[in-house]
Structure formats: structure tokens, C-alpha cells
Length: 224
Image (cartoon, rainbow, N blue to C red; front, top):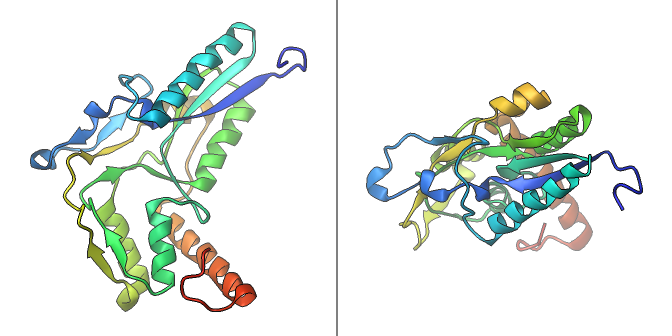
């Protein structure tokens, strides 16, 4: 159908979860280890069922490449955005509604890429039209502790948190995206820092909550 309809390119949203977790997961006694920069050449061994599905999608894309269709796989790291269900935005929703947030694994380090920058990566891939695999992330390692500090700075005395029973993790993630290839081949340059992204999300989510309460009442547990 793609050939029949003259489709020029397929862009597949893959995930960094296809990389071997043994590279970037550490025991508590090794938490001083520097975060691991994952490149497109890092060893593959899907971490979970999502990673398995994404790797299967990448393999399927090779079939289209052989048919002359430009095939681009974007290995996307941890996306956060106003309508996402990631931990950052769940915390923001809770804090805006005056709730106490549950915290665990503060020592973990991730590559958080804002939804706007993720969309930018997809747009750049469509404009440049290159075959291959490319990491889409911020290229910056961000600890959960750093995220909490940003939220505490914004919310001040309204910031309330408590450790969860599962705060003691078996493995701690410390990873981020090496985006050198994406910068060079796709002209992908992330625009939002973690501080700017969180500030934008707070503004957007606060507006959602206001409209929700205006339209459906002022229940504290209103779902946004």
C-alpha cells in the first residue's frame, strides 16, 4: 500500500527502552557512578514489553527500506508534557491541587525531553528525510532530585512531599541520550531546558485545572 500510494518516508516512534538496561541500571552501592550516555550504537536488549514491541517495529521498518521507502526510527527518551501521565506532570497536577506528592528514587537520572522538543524531532526527521536510527532526547542527564528542587522553588511553601514505601529500589537508572547524530543528521536542537519545560507545563496544567473546575465544579479530586 505504501508503494502504491507513493509514500516517500515512514517515521517510527521507537524508544530508548530497547537499549540493554544492564548498561545504565545500578545497585544502591554504585549510585556514585556517572550517568550513561546512550548512543545509537549502544547494545540492544529490550528492557520490557514496550522495548520488545519497539524493536520489532524497527525490524519491520527494514522491510520498507528495502522497497526504497525512507525509513527513520526515532528512539525517544522520557517525554513529559502538559497532558502526559509521566511522573513530572503527575506531581505538578497534585501540587496545583494542594496535594502531597509521593516521592521515590530521587537518586535516579533520566533524559527528560519536553513534548514540544519531541515533536520538533519528528518534524526535523520529516524535513530532512534520512534513513537510519536517531536518538531523540534533551541530551542532558536530569536527576529526580533536581526535578524536585525545581518544583520546590516554584511552589514554595505549597510544596509538600513524602517518601513512599517503595522508595528503596532494587535498581537505579542513570541514563541520558547522546544526540550528536541527531544534531548532525537531522538538525535536531532541543529548545526547552528542564526548568523552562516544567514552568510551561505548570502554566498549561494550571489552566486545565481552572477550566475543569469552572465547567464541572470545584471538587478537589477533579480529574484533569
